[in-house]
Image (cartoon, rainbow, N blue to C red; front, side, top):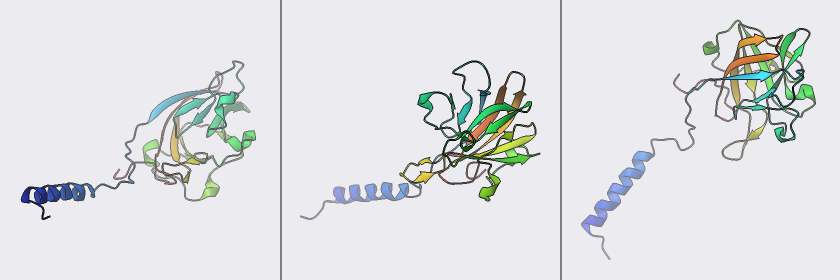
Length: 188
């Protein structure tokens, strides 16, 4: 049976729609910068159930002592030797690839890519929190959108450091792109 002219026209229109959609990358992850601000509490504070750790990718505060934390966090806050420090999970005995790279003297907007050298990431020692420093965080291993193992990279900048109260207010954002060291969206 020979297709009619209207059927042929319909096939051409559908084909044009499908081909025009091919300009979009189906694997591209939409990403717009959206820095947030978060407060964490030092582990040594007397109150229980205060969030003292942070999951950069999911953008959630974590109570380390809680059974529900499931060790799904990238760093914790503590006080040591009269200063606030960031603690990678491994430092607290948690198996993790999470790490923290220090970029002193940098502006938040100027730090556009995570270090390529994996040795730049501290994984088993306290990292002092200081003004005028940007920190790049490599997250713990987790599953990506297509089932692959991913580390995500984010950056944070201390805004308010209160050693006496044991609190830290920081600005942060994390790339949604699996294993991509870029810290800003494409085209920025």
